[in-house]
Image 1 (cartoon, rainbow, N blue to C red):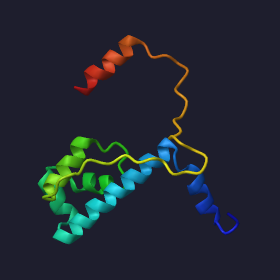
Image 2: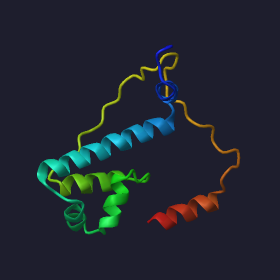
Image 3: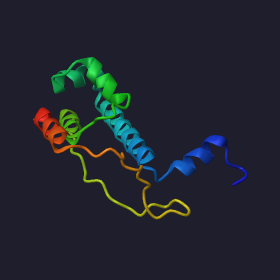
Length: 123
């Protein structure tokens, strides 16, 4: 479209890419957390106390911590006396695309030993 700004054009072209979709979801989740905090009068300090973490952790989380797990999300919702709803899936509505574009996998195969050490380290 001729009336699109540079940013609108870039956003429209990025929709459907995995990185874009992850950021879109993280922003939506963080906005919902902040809205719940404001509605209930809960400060970052209070949320940190309820979660048993430092206030800096809450700040990092609300600034878009890239590794928010489902466990963290459910813990935050519980601390806010809320429940997380199951996300819904819908057809991607990007012109000329019917699926999310996944970046090409690394060409370097991972050894079984490195996978085992990663799994052992995450327990």
